[in-house]
Amino acid sequence: MTARSADRRRFAPAASRNREPIAAVVLPRLPRGARVFEIGSGTGEHAVHMAALRPDTHWQPSDPDPASRESIAAWTAHAGLANVAPPLDLDVRRRPWPVGTIGTADLVLCCNTIHVAPWDCTVALFEGADTLLGPGGLLTLYGPFKRGGGHTSPGNCAFDASLRRQNPAWGIRNMEDVALLAAQGGLAFAEAVAMPANNYCAIFEKAGSGAGL
Image 1 (cartoon, rainbow, N blue to C red):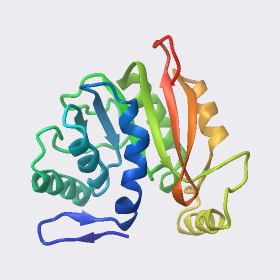
Image 2: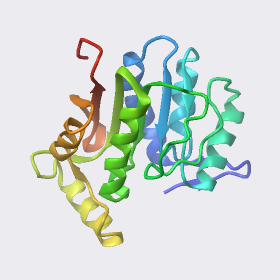
Image 3: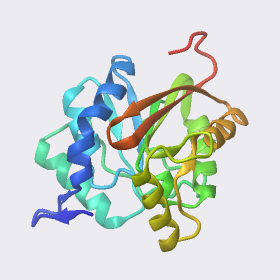
Image 4: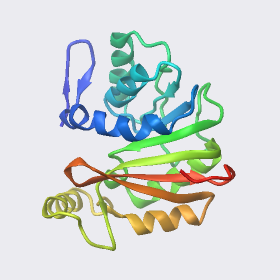
């Protein structure tokens, strides 16, 4: 659920709750001057929050929804940030991706998205991230996951049922299936970081760094 202010900023209560825990996982893993490409940036609150904490980094938000892109631009202007680029219109299934000025990314970030999209979007996300990331670059997915085919909480089970009633192609993904998808391409599963409210940050690394996380 989001609300919109008169200046076109949208507010997602979940973003205000989870932005600090996500930043605590994401930001220490970024090298100085890192280039971040965010998929499904939504309101823009995550990008603006983390870009403000790390002014040395460059953030490229994206979203296929015009109202979301308006919100991202409004949040960026409100915060007065020079290190957040104008949001791109991106559907991960359309190739090639428009990548703006970011070139090769150090991180592809996607929060609370793959469970509200068909599985082919997750496939396209990994294919695009593999192309965009440089050696040692990271793909980080935040949200609810199943583990070993089972839900991690009764709340997630109920949420998954609600999603599938809205759209049978949606639903909480099994982390092992996502890791297998990564392994079929150029990304290796690196770590699953437990987060508040029965969520995870699932981190995948592109081969070529010579070292793990």
